[in-house]
Length: 294
Image (cartoon, rainbow, N blue to C red; front, side):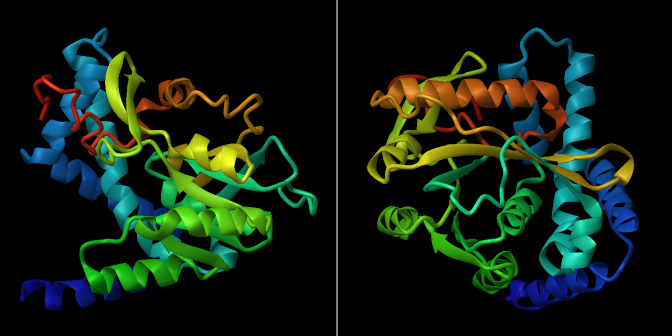
């Protein structure tokens, strides 16, 4: 019953905040994140568990510092949905720097899987790479449990000509789009359970990792183009970083390909550990017989 009132109120607030200067919205989100970090919560606990697992060499002071920074980034990312979902193309142009190792406007771009990673700026990065390619892209998404909010999110994410595809209907749709030379965005660095997954190391910890990216790339066939979003310091906006396509991928060995993906992600996380999505239970699914962390 409460959500019937809170959902439209939240959406209305986001629409209103999209009219405010980006710097002000970013500062408000940062302040809210700092405030919420002072309160004990399950998400705060998850962040600390993940950081302790992935960075055992850090002392408590460093983990506490990065955890606090991350919480501020995570909460800020939700507040900045206002700009990301409802901001104009002109506004986005002002706050996004595109740094690409390839020509994104190449008319001869081969079938391409756009592999995104869950840094706090993934929402903006996905919208921005769609715009930078200047062509219709497919985008796989996990539907939100709140149907009213999910409808708004899908509409907002699709407004720059993205074709939104629920993950439950993904395989055939992805193959169809790739064979039509339509780039497809997807993320594979979350714990989606043991189906179509393998346990491979992520910062030395066995992590349930999807193997479907390599199989889709082999079936299409398609190149895999990794991209990440970075929040710039001093409330200056974002950087969309697009890397060169992976060479010799896939190999036909699902486990080896999943290891490569996680190794690549580790390299990127080390450059800005406070911005990876540590509030997610990355190690929720454990190998048979192994005790859970959370």
